[in-house]
Amino acid sequence: MLTRLREIVEKVASAPRLNEALDILVTDICKAMETEVCSVYLADHDRRCYYLMATRGLKKPRGRTVALAFDEGLVGLVGRLAEPINLADAHKHPALNTFRP
Image (cartoon, rainbow, N blue to C red; front, side, top):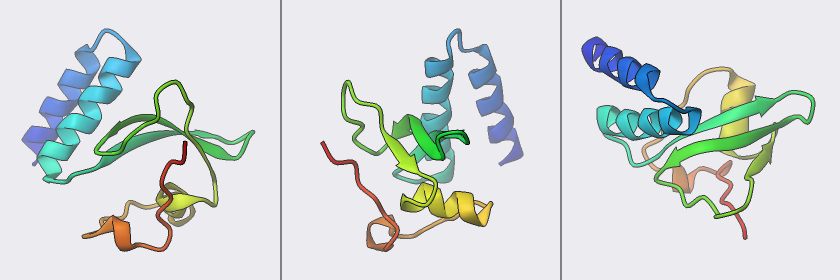
């Protein structure tokens, strides 16, 4: 797994733009972890929310910024716990928050 992680880091580091680096990150982590969903959020402490920056497995609305409050959704739960979570079925978790148009 460490070898795979090193490969991912090298690919991300060689990406010419941030959005490409984040896309590589979520795609390769999904493959390495054999999971359906991986997302990267940016924490904005002034506004107390997380902005969805990249995702694989979630439908991100086109032309719309997705922001979740610090106490909202699974990302909020991860932020409060300050540790990763691994769920067999995230759709069944009560903290799940889907994006609404």
